[in-house]
Image (cartoon, rainbow, N blue to C red; front, top):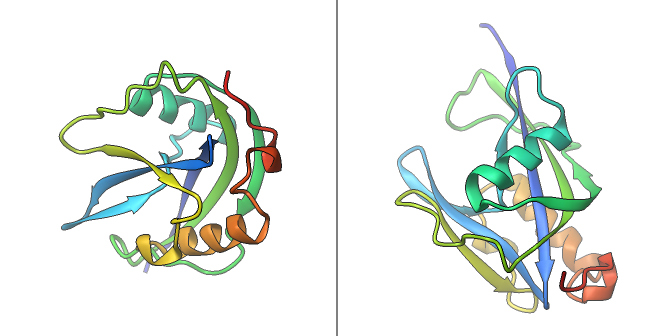
Length: 149
């Protein structure tokens, strides 16, 4: 069996006590996840994350800081011969310019940090990230120096 690595990059955007999430189709069902996606060949992590925010939300991001990289084995449920490695960054974005209406596939929503729960997410890596966000006190704007732009 040929095996491959599937590298994903995601942005954690916290604004006024809420975090941005997106509902999108994965396989045959819709799941809630954080904004971002797969790295394209020849692309670095930060460039990939910037591209994903431009494509999905039509906005630029800045103040990009590493938050978490997968540290356990995750097999892709879409392609069992792929191992998924996900890298999460906290990001700051100009929320006034975000286009949250998405398209038929993507539905963006702000989730208040005090209601954010790991059971909202289907992907095992996202569940870990939600636990880490709560453990780090990310519900407060001061935790990551996020202030309205």
